[in-house]
Image (cartoon, rainbow, N blue to C red; front, side):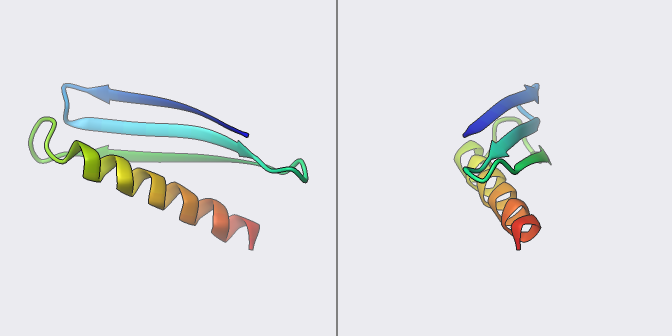
Length: 63
């Protein structure tokens, strides 16, 4: 189960915070904070990196 909340400011700051719960009952919170050089530049890429970084952090904690 995943619960998440996104937030941003003026198209420059983009943040994602979430809690991941695994079938074994363990829960992990992950937060990724970003800042773009230009407003709304690279939205798709930023979202991809946020997901990749959060997944890597949770995987490292589970290892």
